Amino acid sequence: MSRWSNELAEGGYLPASSSAPRRFSAAGSREASGASEGDQGTATTVEGFVIKTLLIGTILAVAWKLGPHIGRGNVIHAVRLLDAETPFMQKSGARRIRRLAATGLATNELLHESAPAKLLALLHPGTDRDVSIAVVEALDAICKEHELMEAVIRAGGTDVLQDAVCQGWIGDVLAHETAASLLVGLKIQEGNLD
Image (cartoon, rainbow, N blue to C red; front, side, top):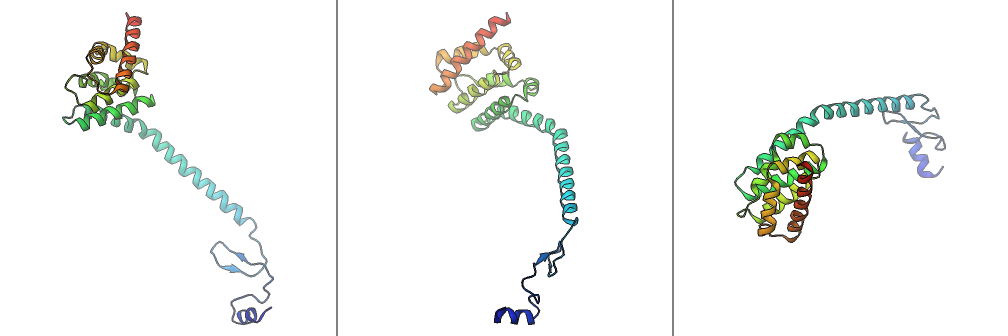
């Protein structure tokens, strides 16, 4: 041992033999002996696994119970934003409806809240450009679900989109093309429903 390790060993900072392996107990203190943990380490990992499993199971059970209520609240809030007076809120509501319709999980709630009819009511010549673009995108997402497409047709979506496409209410070229292709799809579906 070097001079520094001798002084450290005499002061009680190092074990007498520095070649002895050091072990750390669960509490964090050092053990100088060569004793091993044995089964204590395995028991700790099993307990940790059980606790993690129970915690994850509890979180999933709560999410399973609360998920539909949270989703229904999101749909209600998005549809109420369409009734707002400001274009920013209307655009925000249309974008939220587009995202909810894209998941495919909110079809019944969107039908119950009559989202297709409220979206179509926003599409008229005096509508803000950004709102009309958001409404067309939301209608495009909604019409990917068969039940919602039928609701758009029943609410007069073909006539509204026909006027919007022919008279050029929608200021964006891409949204205009989306509305035109959506109109074709609605007319085909309307022919199938008759």
